[in-house]
Length: 263
Ligand SMILES: Cc1cc2nc3c(=O)[nH]c(=O)nc-3n(C[C@H](O)[C@H](O)[C@H](O)COP(=O)(O)OP(=O)(O)OC[C@H]3O[C@@H](n4cnc5c(N)ncnc54)[C@H](O)[C@@H]3O)c2cc1C
Image 1 (cartoon, protein in one colour):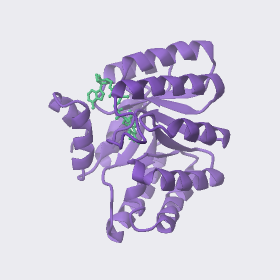
Image 2: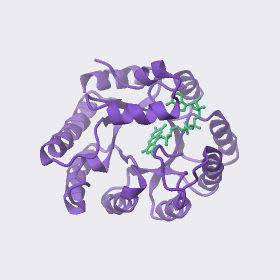
Image 3: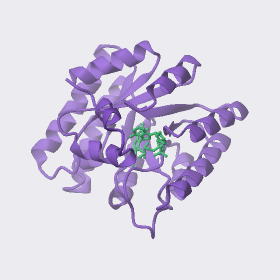
């Protein structure tokens, strides 16, 4: 945690915010879940005490979703209570499509309790356009991503080019009709498209990127006055995250290591 907080401080010097995530997912034992929930609460306290420009992003499968939805919602409520007390933001990652419905249900529940809650959505899924339109009408906040999980072709766009077309379509919708959204991509074309759309529509939006990827561009955008947040994952349980990133960029093992906070 100390390393992640230090990284947040370094990013803040570049006018970049940090979104901290404790690595680990798919917990089936209550001990790991409850330790993670306690650590997120501690993390929010440390962010506030140090006056950092940082928030957290949680995975519901590390908060009890594998055990029971009610149990998970209660754990998320504990984290949310601390976030609310400090006026911070709570982001939720989106995991594979097996968990989309439950994740959205818990997200919508939290949104009724506190408005500064954001949810990652994945443009590789065909359902996402309808989900985004509904969530934004409910006052939601979304993080637009392409999606990191391999999905069944019946419910997804298996070709990355089709996922990108859908990403572009969702970008146009968000800029034309919404505020409070995050463009989370390293795809230069999508970033440029966002910059163009941002000139036409005066919207409250931010860029989000993963630690270790396009850091120079992130600093340039922040320097130009755009709101930029870097997603900083930390902790010993790095294998699943590392493997997903490796599949996206198989040749680039060095970047993979830079994408994790090191002690
Ligand atoms: C802040 C943030 C939060 C995210 N949260 C979620 C989430 O909750 N759920 C989820 O499913 N997905 C999440 N993702 C991951 C996302 O879905 C994509 O898998 C990932 O961002 C790669 O897609 P891309 O949009 O960058 O485009 P791509 O088309 O995959 O990549 C565009 C270009 O970016 C560069 N690039 C991309 N990835 C890497 C990499 N790992 N290393 C080096 N260069 C790279 C390459 O030059 C590549 O050509 C998140 C991404 C970000 C940035």
